[in-house]
Amino acid sequence: MTTPRLIAAVAAALALGASPALAQHAGHGMHADAQASAAAAHGIAEGRLENGVRVVEVAVTEDGFVPSKVKANKGEKVRFLVTRKTDSTCAKEIVIADQGVNQPLPLGKTVAVEFTPTRSGEIRYACGMNHVAGVVFVP
Ligand SMILES: [Cu+2]
Image 1 (cartoon, rainbow, N blue to C red):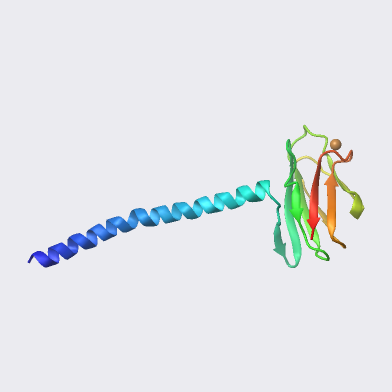
Image 2: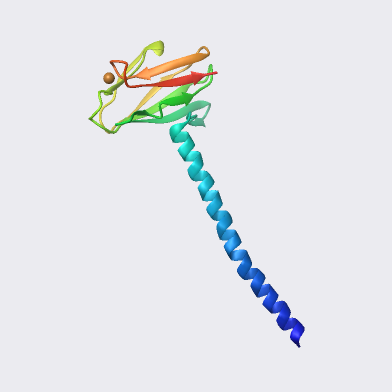
C-alpha cells in the first residue's frame, strides 16, 4: 500500500508547489498594471472612448496640468474633464487658444471642456498667462 501514499504525497507536493506559482503570477499581473498607470501618468495619456468621444480626466495640481501630454485623433471630439485641485498655481482657467476655449476652473469642481482637432499637429492647453501648459498631440 505504498503506491497510493506516494501518489497522495506527490499530489500534495504539486498542490503546494502550485500555490506560490499562482501567487507569483497574480503579483506579476498587478505589477504590470502599476507599470501601465505609471506610464500613463508620465507618458502620453489617451483617455478613454465613450460613444466616440475621447474623454480625458485632467487635474490641475502643483505639477500643473496632469496629464500634460495627451494624444487625440483628427476629427474625433475630445472632452477634457478638468478638476483644479490646488489654489497654489496660477492655472485657474484653461485656455486652448487654437480652439477658442477660455474656461474658468473653480477649485474642486470638474469642468467639461470639449473640442475637436481638425488637423494634425499640436494643440496647447494652458493657463491664462500661457506658462502652465500641456499639449495634445494629433497624429
Ligand atoms: Cu499662469
